[in-house]
Image 1 (cartoon, rainbow, N blue to C red):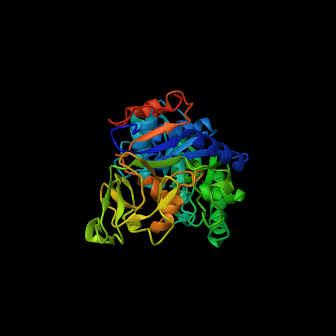
Image 2: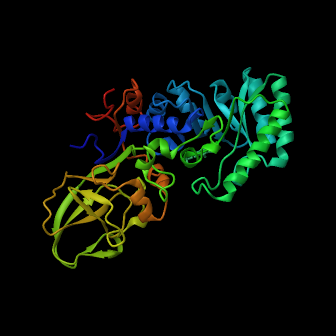
Image 3: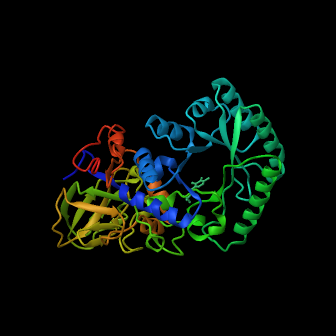
Length: 409
Ligand SMILES: *Cc1c(COP(=O)(O)O)cnc(C)c1O
């Protein structure tokens, strides 16, 4: 039975998130774990995922956008939160007031943080970011000294607290790549410089999931795993989730909205990219590219073992993925009827495909498969013991609710 009016859903296993974080904590040794829950927790739902990560032993949360940080605070999550992506003119006062740590990569950002601190009368906690070689965020090393000095001057007048120094790796998923050690060397110099200039850093941090799992030398005081929190491997070429004690937390399933017999030679979906070879049964799945099903996976029947589990079978997509739906060729002997459940991906424990399988088929990474799951696909939760974690999300969409909603909560 569908648990909502929407005939498909992502079922998020909060127990998996807790145990993944516990595993990451074990791997991280003495370093703290910041669970990165940006992009709606990689599609898994921000607040319930954050609560599960904290229950699993994370002591920090990381987000890209200010609104994500504020949503955590609005839900009553009071763990340390670092936010790292904002443009000039952002309402930083709201972050400072909410006790959200801010990343600072440039002089203009420091000026705006100081202004926000003055306006709110609160000391802003900042993490100075250095570009050790990713070529994305962070101050260039040659700019670091003046940025640090300005930040420490602001600290002396009480407007900011320089609590962190941090950076991000370009090739963490290739642990032996020479840039990894080169970036760490630049980072070490940046840390030494900051400490020489008088910073008393609470946390120095560099590692994402891949570096957390494969490279203890990168752990420093705090690691920042994202994808591994959700049970997917950041290094599929080196090992799947099970190799790192992780369990994929998201399962995407749908009910067939139609099953019907069509004759041989019947064109299927736009442009008839698939044509039936013989009389067969077609099944219509109510998920499409607006829901995050990659259009690149169209006609995947020939290219891989089959992206969709139907009963005990694995079937490919027949023809083009549409905006809201795609079609399966269930075969001439199919007994499926409308309302029968199919599984797009899950943990793999039950023979179903995984997000990694979809990623491989669509020429992308598992991150994109889960993070692009459409907002209209309801998230339901199992394995929750966070006391209201899932209840909170019941208000996040009009179609939430039903027997699976909230797990044990
Ligand atoms: C997304 C992100 C992470 C987490 O990366 P994963 O590969 O998902 O572990 C960590 N740090 C920063 C700066 C990020 O943008």
